[in-house]
Image: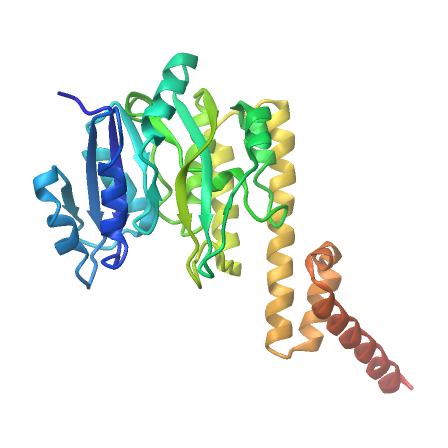
Amino acid sequence: MQPDVSFVIAAFNAEATLARAIRSALAQRDVTVEIVVVDDCSSDGTVAVAESFAQDGVRVVALAKNRGPGGARNAGFEAAEGRWVAVLDSDDAVYPERIARMIQRGERLGAEIVVDNLDVHEATGRRDAMFTAAQLESLAEIGLADFISANLMFDRTFTLGYMKPIIERRFVQEHALGYDETLRVGEDYILLASALAKGARCVVEPEIGYCYHVRAGSISRVLELHHVGAMLDADAIFLRDHTLDAAATAAQARRTRSLQEAAAFLTLVQHLKDRAPFKAVGAALSDPSALRHLRMPIAARLRRVARSFSVRAFDQSA
């Protein structure tokens, strides 16, 4: 009998948290579940942890070479057999009622994608909802233009790109949907944007169903310049492969500009960290809009560097 949902768990050196993720998926109520754990060439006990759940029907796909989170999830999508596919990160968890609630909403509204709210668990022990219930209740459905507009760099702490959708596997197969394997940040965004661009309807379940655990040093929270460059490249491919309406095109222009500003900002900060004042001032002058992202202590430091640069230039010319 076909499962209602396939959980795809990409795992790399995840022995410390994987069991929690698997148990939460197995605890889903009122739905049939299969779990596909994709081991991305781990060097710890990840495979042993996954195989310890074999009696519960957990399947393990062991990759021959490391493909990153996007590649591992793509392998999981290929192995999945459920009517719906749900992505679960190996260090996160889901609440028992989540999938039944999401499938019910999706089928009632004729949607191919359903997203829901997230519980954010900070490493400090702090816990809070990623979005307010009011925000998601007013949103109800997410179109492509709205989704792009809600994924601007540095616009807010959490964007809609953090949401973990469940997607009809039929739609995934019919449209050859998959993750961009070159991305380490923003791969969830591109997948959902591509689905929306291909005509998927995405509805919102306002209840919290997903537990997002923030790790110290998490790559999704420590943005580097090469991550932004990869996102710009991925967006360029997205634009090449999809036809956008006027609203989505305008939203994409704003997103592209926000990524360019982010690149300029990160370049500026790196020059400051490297104690390279001339390069820092040059970066600031090449894209002054990056300055608005600086918090006051760094901004004050930059102003001091700029004043110093001006005085030295004057002295040399005198």
